[in-house]
Structure formats: structure tokens, C-alpha cells
Image 1 (cartoon, rainbow, N blue to C red):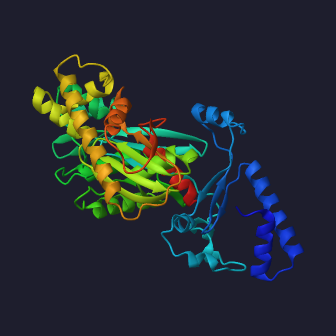
Image 2: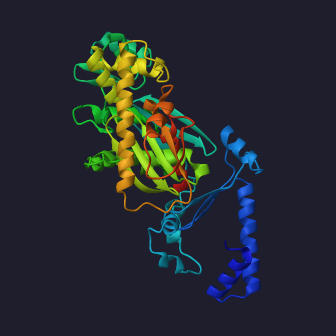
Image 3: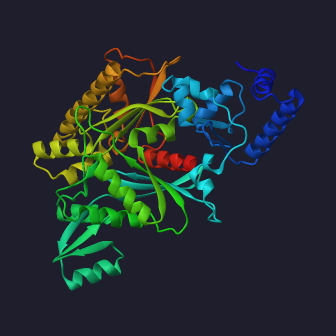
Length: 446
């Protein structure tokens, strides 16, 4: 551990400055940092990291802090830069840390500090999921989320129907002789007519079989994300590549990035599993395994101090379960999805044929997920040196049914794991964890 005295000695030696001047400069710097943090202002140091304070803690975190006689409710958070994290993890040449600079240049500052817009940039997080699109916005300590279903249904066009939709403020578009009803209202129409809602995305990516898919996604995003003339920052989620095969993520990511930039944002993609780590692993120093069980994919990321070690996805997820159960029960997937989201309890014995099938396919999905994760860790050649056990955090709509956590942990504990896991826990808000994590990523880009 380096003490303050040792730090002064080292700076004096490296710079050749007078020891008294170095001591005074360090004291002034620490006082300035303290005043900023007490005032709730973040501190960002290029190539080193960011400090922020205060942050709100969960009830569980507060109990843990109080049990250790620490100050409850408020902590100073440090997030290392990617360069520092790689140096600590041993994945970047350590000789770079010995390069010293006196003074600085504007080009060394984060991008937004180079821009003289006269307005403070805002930041947003966008979860672009197969089932739902979620926007995270608001204040850093109190992220608000808005959600729209990423789906649409078509009904035959008539002037009368169009007038009724307009009077009821239902979002729709025209496409030839059809009306496309999209977003949250689509599920209501799908259930009323007992038809399957159509998806602009499939298996976590843009759906090439839907001619209107990209048009619909843009319209749904515009319900949540408003145009801006400022240089606001928006981070959006992208899935991991399926293990054993390269998915065409470039087109999917590029289309979203270009569209969001056309709305006036500085857009940047974030791996979906990593966004779960950003949202849920602050007290773990952003080290652990984040899993997002969505509609099109289950996304997994292992990160060390916020730096991704590996990520992957599997296509067995919510839609796989819905379609498989629908096929063996002669029901439409939309109806199965409603049953799953409203009444499924994996902790109790199934009460009908629908729940029996759901139990079977959920177990298959979790088995595939756990075994793929175990294999990925065993075969990875760049695992960081871990001095303690790490957590696994689950999130996503497919993980929402009661009993999912217990079923996952039971299957996970059946065999030895390549690394030590401290706990398996559910995200505080499973449906919005990805959007909140993207929001946090955007905040650190500002």
C-alpha cells in the first residue's frame, strides 16, 4: 500500500520539484477533490478513472455496510479507466504507466469537454431488446425508465378503423392496404384477435424476414427518444456473438448507431451482459458475471473492474420457450407469453399442460446457459487473477418468473465450477437492468 508520504517522495523524485511544493500541491488537490465530492460533483481523470458521490444504496447494501461499521447510505465510487483496469489486470504493457507528462493538452480531455456547445450534455441508456425497448434517463442517483414493446400487428385498412385508432391515440403506421399497430398497444390487439404479434427483431438482431421491421423499430425508438440539438450522449445495448459462430452484429449495430446519431445524439454501443454489470455490481467493483435473459437471446459477460474478459450469447431464451411450448400445446406464442409473464411460478408444481411444458423448456434453457458458461471459462486463456469469489447477477424478462433464481442456482450448483462464485442473485429491477447499465455507461462518457 502506498502512503501519502511515499506518494510525495515518488512525485518529488520523478519531477525534480521541491518537496514542499509537491506537498502543498497534493494537499490543495485533495481539498479540491473533497469539496467537489461533498457537493456531489464527479471527478474525471483521463486515463485514470472517475470518482462520484453520493450514490444511493439498496437496503441489502446498507445492512452490509452497517455491519462493518462503515458510513451508511453514501459512499464515494471510483470507476477505473479502461487503460488502468487493463494495467491492473495484467492485459496491457505495464511500461506505459511510467510515461509521465507535465501539463496537458485539450486533446487529452474526454470528447465532450472538447466541445464548446455552451450547454451541459445529458445522457441516456437504451436497451434495444427483442421483446422490449427501454429508455433510461433522469438523474444519476435516480434513473427513470420508460418501456415500449418491440412488436407490431397488422389490421386491414379502412378509414373508419384509422379514425378510431387516431381518436384513441393508438400508435400506428400505414403500409399499403394495411395498418401497422406497434409498441405497447400491439399486444392488446394480438390477444384480442388471437394472433401472433410480429417482431422487428429476431434472436437479438434486426429481423431480415420483416420488410417493415426497421421502419417499425425507428418509430418505437422515437416514442421514447426525442430529437436533440445538443450533443447528448446515448449508450445502447447490443448482444454478444453466439458462441461457436459469428453473428452479423456489424449491420445491426451500425443501423442503430446511425439512426440515433441522426436524432442528434453521440451514440455508443454497450454489450448487454456488461450493462448488467454496470447496473448491479457497483459494490463488487464491477467485477463478476452479468447475465441478461431476454426474448431473443441470453447474453453473458464476465468483466474484471468493468473491463470485459469475454462475452457470448445463446439463442435459447424467452422466444425459444414461447415457440416450443406453443408447438407442443397447439397454442399461439403470444398467449403462451402472457401466461408465462402473468402467472408462471417455477417454484411450484405445474398446474396444467402449459406450465408443464414451460418447466421443461426453462430447465433446458438454464442447462444450456450454465454449461456454455462453464465451457467458456474453462477454455478462456486470458482470465484475470482473482483474489476473491465473484458474483453472478441475473436479469431480463425471461428471468422474471418466480422461482427462476432458485432453479438456476440448483442447476448451477450440481457440478463444480471453474472459478469461485460468491453468490447468484437477481438484479434489483430485472426488466430495466440493461437500460440502467447503458445509462451509467453514458454518464461516464460525459
